[in-house]
Image (cartoon, rainbow, N blue to C red; front, side):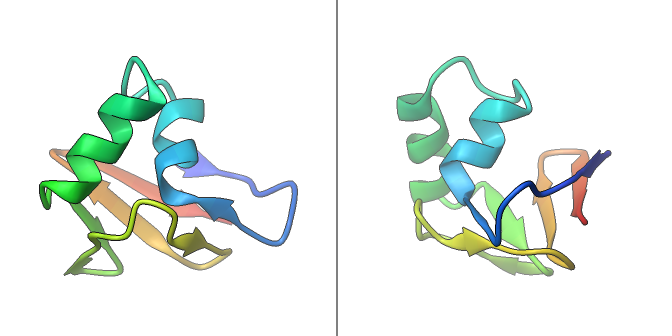
Length: 67
């Protein structure tokens, strides 16, 4: 799936929420904090990591390309 940025970046937990991959921001923060999310092939544990154009996010079998 692709996500088109409207600003310079989006925080990781907000991206998961906007794409309806989680029911709440709190759930997104838990998934990130527990190590279920990869950014550019490496585990990302920072809930507020700034996701920018060119990043790839993986959560379970969902791959998000940020453009």
